[in-house]
Figure 1 (cartoon, rainbow, N blue to C red):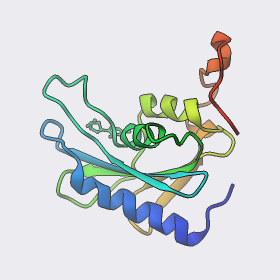
Figure 2: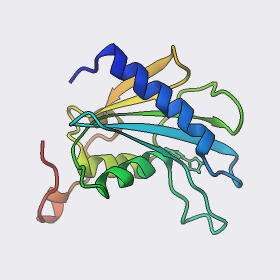
Figure 3: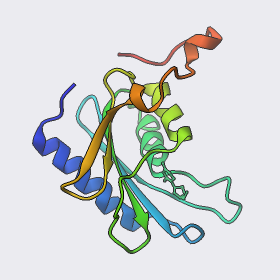
Figure 4: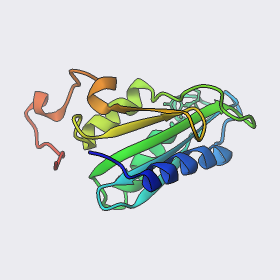
Length: 149
Ligand code: THU
């Protein structure tokens, strides 16, 4: 699955922009995400932290849960941007393991693209299966599988 240049650019820009909304009083590390659904809608997200720490939510999962809670379950790609709060990012963002697991629930590992953004001109694109090989999925527990690809 290829993304056209304009869509790629839009996802990168939106992921970078979304860092401004991150609520990160504890880590001071802001993350933004832009998730593209199969019907070409973009759902954005940022990380939202909590004083009790475990209720905190990553930017990627914020974007996924916004989409799924609006009835959208099929996706093409996500862009992620991260760095110290209030500063331009200087390194490639990389989704945490929990977010990779959530991606696995809804995305085809062969097709779904993860765009790890450093800045608007520097980014790396991975397939989900590269970032979470041999993933644990619903098939393993012999239940109804949500994947629709
Ligand atoms: N974080 C994300 O939002 N996405 C990731 O994939 C990695 C980590 C957030 C969680 C926490 O608010 C902060 O970054 C520091 O771990």
